[in-house]
Length: 312
Image 1 (cartoon, rainbow, N blue to C red):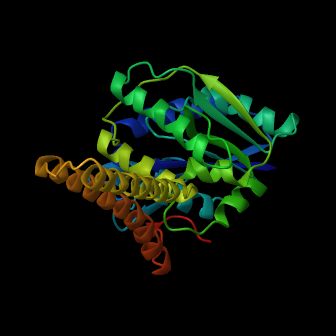
Image 2: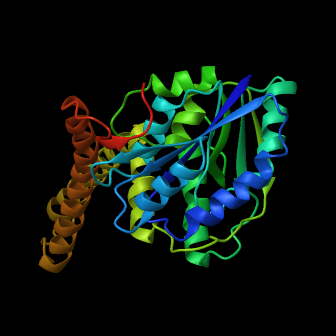
Image 3: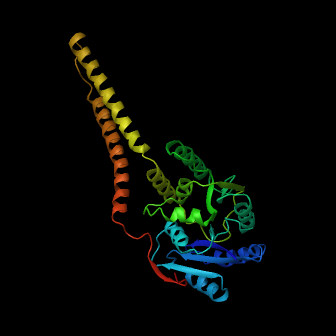
C-alpha cells in the first residue's frame, strides 16, 4: 500500500473546513484503491470553533489525524509540524480555504510516480481578485529575490506541493527557527514539475494575510536567503564617503583658490539629515540580521503541541 499524507494548516477556518473535506473526499475517490490517505489537520491556535470541527471530523472519519498548538505559532510552524509528523511515503501541503484545488492531486501524484519527478509544485498564472497594489508588490518581490539569491523562486508559487519522502526528509533536516517554506523548497533542489492554474478565491472566511503581514513575510524571506542588503548598505556607505571626500576638495578649492567664503547652513542641515538617515537605514538592515541570529541561537522550539491524535 502506498500512503499519501495531506497536511492542512488551519487557523480560524471553522467555515471552510467542512467544505474543504467534502471537496477533498470527492477527489480522493479518483485514486487507485491501493493508495491510502492520512489527512493531518494542524490547528494553529485558532480562536474560533476550528478545533471542535477538527475533532468532529476525526470522530467521523478514520483517515483524519490532528495536532493542536498551545497558541498561534504561524503557518510556517504548522507546515513544519505537519512535515515532521507525516507518515506517508508521499506528502502534500494544502490550504483549508480551497484556494489549492484538490482536483489537481491525482495529476500531481501521477507526475511524481510515473514521470520521474521528486516533487510537483503549483503556481497561479494570474492574481485575479487581488488588489492591484498587492499584486504589484508580489511580482516586484519575486523579481527582487530572484536577483539576490543563488536559486530561483517561482513567481506565483503556492505552498501546495506534492513531494516524495526524500524531499520531505531534506526539508525537515533544515531546523532553522526563521522559516520561509517557498525558499526552503527551492533551496533543497530536486527535480520539480510546475502545474499552472488560475487564481481561486477563498471558499469561506477571510484571509489571514494582511498587507503588513505579507511585507514582514517578504523581509523574512530576503534576510533568510540573501546577504545582499548588507552588501547594499556597505556600497551606500562607500558612495557617501567618496561624495564627502569630493565635496571637501571642492570646498577647499572654492575657499582658498577662488576666495568664495563657505556658507549655507540649510544645505548643510539637509546633508546631515540625509546622511543620518542612510546610517539609520544601514543599522536597521544590520539589526534585522542580528535579530534573526538572536532568535536562532536561543534554540526555542518552532511549535508547542497542546494535544494531538497521532502517536509517534
